[in-house]
Amino acid sequence: MPEVFNWHLGRPMEYAFEEAHPERQFAAVFNINRCIGCQTCTGACKATWTFSKGQEYMWWNNVETKPYGGYPHHWDMKILQQLDEAHQAGGREATWRSDDSSKYGIYEGMTITEAARDGEQALGYLPPDAEWTAPNFYEDTSTAYKGGPMGISLDGASLPEHQAWFFYLQRICNHCTYPACAAACPRKAIYKRPEDGIVLIDQARCRGYKKCVEQCPYKKSMYRGTTHTSEKCLACYPRVEGDDPLSEGVPMETRCMTVCPGKIRLNGLVEIGEDGTWVEDRQHPLYHLVQVEKIALPLYPQFGTEPNIYYIPPRWAPRSYLKQMFGPGVDEAIGRYTAPSRETLAVLQLFRTTQKMIFRYEIEEGPLVHETEVNGKPWSMYDDTIIGFDSKGGEVARLSVVEPLHERSKERLNSI
Ligand code: SF4
Ligand code: SF4
Image (tube, rainbow, N blue to C red; front, side, top):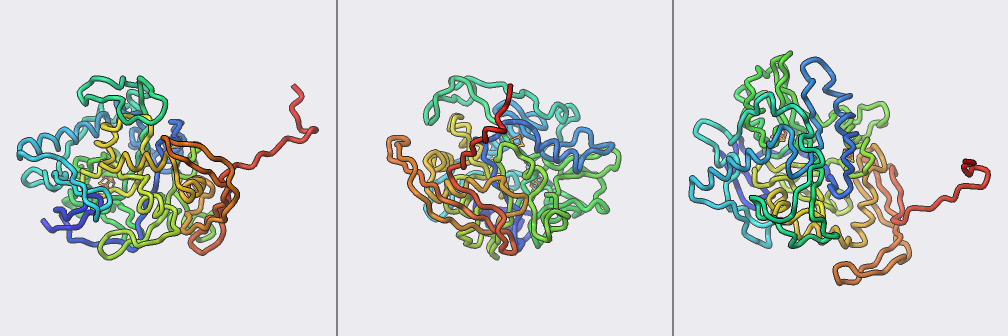
């Protein structure tokens, strides 16, 4: 197998195809701390793309409750278990080594492609039909901190210490840099677009062999019985292309992103260099959150597909669980999110302020409005104003850190 460089893992890895990268990559940051589990995103996606016959069980966007929930059921536990068995069989450990030159350290274990069985491109399994039912199985079921197979403890929890915990995990296709679905397809029906990195299934080429369903570790490719083909999230590409009538020719965020009442999602296109890393773009909000502040982390980076949806981890969940899910950057990410820098606090205001993708921001400095201590260290808050610009440089968002307070005039007071 050819070798490609995976910056999430800080090392080269085996992959089915030679290294090739798009000019720009569809990416997003999801702030788990703010999700209210309302499923508006899920409904918006369903109403747009998967409302037809044969798509009844298909949820390209789903929000599942961790630690127990999953769609399909237990998808992550199953693939983690396979990966664990492969490590045990090979006498290896899935550890990370710290290394200052890489973003999160160097992953010393095997990815799903490196642990693949003979004749396969990646580890995987085909979920039986029953596992695709009940998309939020175990909804809002909390678990105790102590005990259990993972030996979860309270250590490192930074919020008021809940004795029981859960959190929502919002999931769409990650439009991976090294998609396992594309590697698995014997028909070469899956491709990654050079202009925006969106991963699509060519419905005319697909013969429904379900190898993508089997080998996508995130289980985001789904089989449709009425057409005998597989389908997946297509990143609302007409919106990303600027073809939506509302978008005035500039790239727009996807449906699931723009409807979010929790304001947890920020979606955009980032510039990719020839080596696959993000080109420095200091005033891009995603670049700031992922590359500069590192408060948003990839989901299960150890799988090795280099997913492009990044998560701000929940502050209240046990760190051992989160580190398995988001890699070794969890402590630093939560620390920086809990006491955000002046710039980060302003950038966090941009979530869900416009349907148009923001390509650049500027900050106008405002007065100091609050001083306190966070985790024993002084922390200051400024009422700065952040301004977001679309791909053509037009202003599409302007927000202050302190939300303005509007007093209702007397004649508009409620009379009851
Ligand atoms: S998440 Fe799965 S379906 Fe989406 S690009 Fe990655 S491997 Fe393919
Ligand atoms: S719409 Fe937003 S807040 Fe509601 S479930 Fe989806 S991601 Fe969470």
